Image (cartoon, rainbow, N blue to C red; front, side):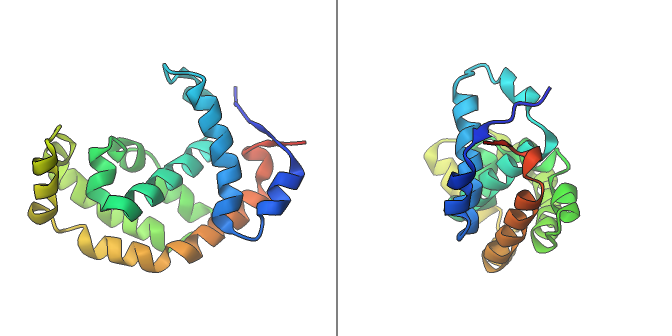
Length: 167
């Protein structure tokens, strides 16, 4: 069973000029659904497409704010790397972000124990000097993210019924 939010078509049309504004219309609805279920059971009803969009949002937000180390330390490592996110994004037309994810997964697996360990703020900060393997990937991510997000938006627009019920 899928849990698709209802979204007004005018709301999507108004957000259509900016890829992130458009995607956030959907993502905000997903977060409303999730926040109404503190146990997280409702996420089991999300489709693969919905999970992919959420994972891309977490990836973007975390990497832009603190890199892959922050993404993993904040508990998103498994959600990003232990799911077919890169493969799905590739099938949706993205090319560069999936390649970055494939390379980041190798680093994640290599340092998984250390990266997923609960840390103090000082230990967290030290991870950035101890594990520098992500640095070049983050730079590449920043270079391609805007274009890749535009490709993602086009895919979502063309397959909107897999993401929401439009009213």
